[in-house]
Image 1 (tube, rainbow over the protein chains, first blue to last red):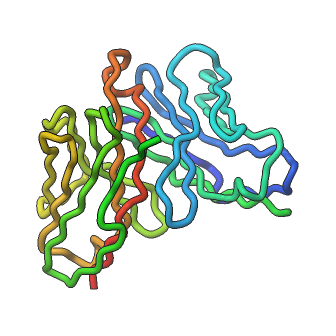
Image 2 (image 1 turned 180 degrees about the horizontal axis):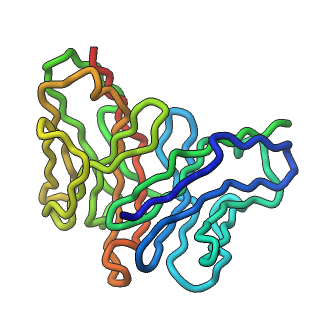
Amino acid sequence: AQSVAQPEDQVNVAEGNPLTVKCTYSVSGNPYLFWYVQYPNRGLQFLLKYITGDNLVKGSYGFEAEFNKSQTSFHLKKPSALVSDSALYFCAVNDYKLSFGAGTTVTVRA
Amino acid sequence: AAGVIQSPRHLIKEKRETATLKCYPIPRHDTVYWYQQGPGQDPQFLISFYEKMQSDKGSIPDRFSAQQFSDYHSELNMSSLELGDSALYFCASSTRTSHGGGRTDTQYFGPGTRLTVL
């Protein structure tokens, strides 16, 4: 079975500081990994995905993610966090359907 | 850009009633997915359709059924509603690319329908 795990329920950072949201995966075969963000009472917004190729993937709103095969990780990063980045972040693996991690709540304080 | 449209946005039903949720995918998208997100939980896959045929099935109760119509919109029909069905129901759509056969396709989500069963 394909699965992802997000080891942190919450991440708190100060505005302007780097933001990292962790994700590890357990996949047989090639991993197809995605990051989504959910704002309160809203749908999920696609941020970026890893399919193949370059291990550093750039996405929307200044986010990027690093795929690390040896550590089976796909961490989401942003060099300088904004208060507006405060939201719920989901890592997911696509096996013809998305299987999500439990989610990480990010709070960026001014 | 056009997004996924879901209706209604909010729905309140009594136990044992029925509900129908509608989803209109992004134009030219051929695949529709339904997910259920309970309070404080991650979204769980229910069912998907590709070119109007059911393509995959997840943890969807037998009381639920769904279909995709000729215009690619989809409906999720829920009968004998239970309190535990209260959740946010998302529809997502994608367009099938040849590489990966669907596994590499980005799913774009609608705003969801919040179902409350009293």
